[in-house]
Image (tube, rainbow over all chains, first blue to last red; front, top):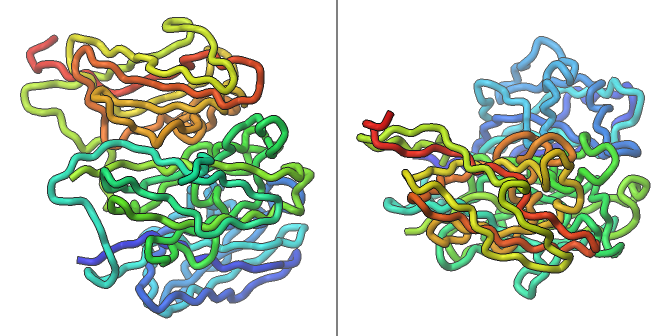
Length: 302
Length: 161
């Protein structure tokens, strides 16, 4: 019996000029476990709006653990991804899954065939780390239990749950989702959005965010991704409808965390938030943004 | 651990038929919730002829034919099941809870339901309870209860026609 744990491997390229190719790109993997790739996505810091359209003028392919190409030649991204670039939590799903050994590398080819330089290109490989039973803490359902649909929320602005307020360039690290003592909680999806669409009378931005990244960590600090991932590429986005070009910002339905994350009662999930919107004040204005996160899943009573 | 939604089976001796409990502004309402105000214990009365199993909630918007808009996007709710169990951690903005599962943008977006996992068992004649909070700083009141559908099945004896 083995244990699957959600994980995103992300290769971040600060800048890729128009016409430039990464051939090959190389993404080294952790030593602690094999990785089963079940999804592939792309993200860029958009040029001046929230649009990701430059990603639709690129070429992409990648290789398996033996170095064999999984495509005869790099494929135009709209054809390969079918517009499932990871936004909405919708990733291109390689089938069958592509396994990599501990300490292996993911290699591939990426060509920027667009007319613009790509900034902060993220090539995202979504899947699971595969651990042997007992190798990591693996709390799970008791033999007899009663499930109850439940949604936690962080960012309420209480003493125990401070407001999540981010200036245009800022980070909030070590934020906590605290699980109550009455029942275990299983996290199946999450949704992020504005706390108040009126901006609390002009104190906060009503236009949401453009470049907001998140990294989840379990109670021991072990991360669920090697780098922070754009929050709309992990969760859905529920607050973008007020901003320009909403349809390019993200999803309005929650992204799903697969496999689900099981947390015992009284445990915590840590998460970092990093906002890099200084270049986008024309889109989101220059005010801080106050967000709230809905953690969607179920309580498990034993 | 992964498993399909709605793995609960119909018990022997019963049959399930599709069932929707709509909640509409015109039907059930009401009035407005002023800014910074609460309205608690809004009752969604279920039928009294058979158990109802609610498996999803579809949220369309504040009223029929109106975009939900930023106003109703600000509204927060907490939902209780038929046994009084809270299904939310306090008042949750509806766009984090189910607004995103509503109809077309800008009302909701995806056109998909917000599933309940596990399903909500509602005995005959039971009630679901919604508490509202309008945190808006706008002077405009939120027209409750909003336009939504609780979707699932009604569980009838197999002998029923």
